[in-house]
Structure formats: C-alpha cells, structure tokens
Amino acid sequence: MGETRKKTKPKPKTSDDEAEATGELASPHAFSLHLACGLSLAAALWIARAGGESVDLVSDPSRTLRLVWVIECPIAILLYSLARERPAQTSYIRAVVRGALALPAGAMVNALGAIALGAPVGTQYLAKTINWSLVMSTWTVVPAACVFGASWNSWQRIFAFTKPISSIDFMICLPAHGAIIGAWFGAWPMPLDWERPWQEWPICVSYGAMIGYLVGMVASLGFILLRHGHDHVKVD
Image (cartoon, rainbow, N blue to C red; front, top):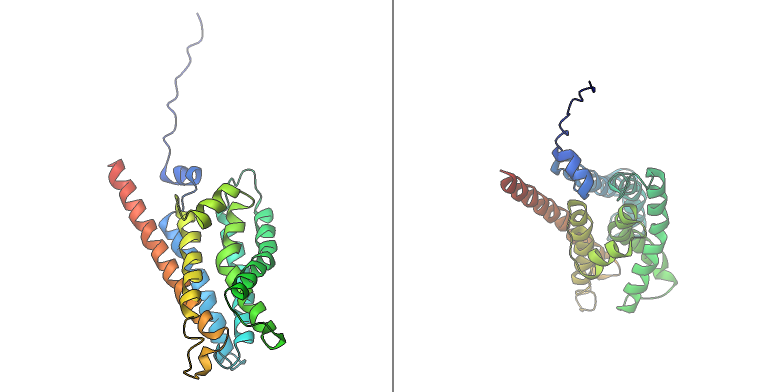
C-alpha cells in the first residue's frame, strides 16, 4: 500500500502579506513615517529659534534652512528606505546610499529650476540657494530615490503623470508636489513693492514650500485611509 499523503491547506494570506506584495503600507506605518518627518521639521525650526541659534527664516534663512535639511534628511532617508521597492532584491543599506546620493543631485535640479524661473543669482544668494535646494531635495527627490531607486517607470508615474497607485506612492507624490506648488505660490509676493523683509529670496518661497509639504503629507494620509477603507469594504 502506498503511503497516504496528508493534504495541507495553503496558509491564507494576511493583510500584511498582501501589503508587502503590493507595496502598500499600513495606515499606522504611514502615519508614523509622516509624523517623524513632520516632527523633525518642527524640531529643526525650534532649535533654530530657541535652541541656541536664535534665528529664523526671516532673520537668517540660510542657517535655518541648513538646520532643516541636516536634521530632517537623515530621518527621511532611514525611514523611506524601509519602504523600498523589492526589498528581497534591494538591501536596506543600498536604499540608504541611494537616498544620500540623491540629496545633492536633487538639490542641483531644484536650484537650476529655481534660477530658470527667476531666482536671483549672485554670491550673496549662493548659500541661501544651496540650502533651500537641499531642503527641497529632501522633500521631493530623496524619498523617491530611497523607495524607487533607478526605476524609471516609477519616477515617471509619480512626477510626470502624477498617478500614484499605492500607499507609498501617495506618501511620496503628494508631499513632493505640495512642496513644489507651495514654493511656486510663495514666490508671488517677491516682485511686489511692499518692502517687507520676508519678501526676500528664499524666505517666502520656503514658507510656501513648507506649507505645501505639510498639506501634502496630511492629504496623503487621507487618501491612504480612504483606500484602505474602500479595500475593506470590497473584501467584506
């Protein structure tokens, strides 16, 4: 008599397994990531104002912006690298290195874009432009580099077509677009003859980018909650 083989039922997939396979992040994880980035931004502004520097965006934009990217960028790299695509093929260290290399590359792109759109050029603006560009790179290019690497299709989907399809897509797309759109709106008061100190480059542009970035983070969390709620309704 042949040996009888016990048939084992396949283990049902849990929501965490499906999330890992599709690149989805659970809502608490998405909230924690955005909260950490938001708190690092707040900490940088607090340190600049009350932690011994005694400066702000109006009195010393260069030093304030430098504190923002120095504090927030490492946190963004470390956290977004955890959400990298294809984690089985891409190590965490490799994702971290991608984010670090993307910081200066993204800063160059942002600086050239700002200059092309009318940002002032000169030695007195050099430090301000460099630090503003590094902050913008932290909010736009660095997260995408950590997660997508050299995946051209993913970059094109997020930045060219604005078609996020997963939770991490929303977390990268909306804050990045919010920062860019906010910076554009923030530049409007610069040429006006109000003669206010905050009209100087890149003060009002930085405030606009910061507001747009924070609004984008909140909006991305809202979209993620809606998607997860819709998915649960479909399953039920």
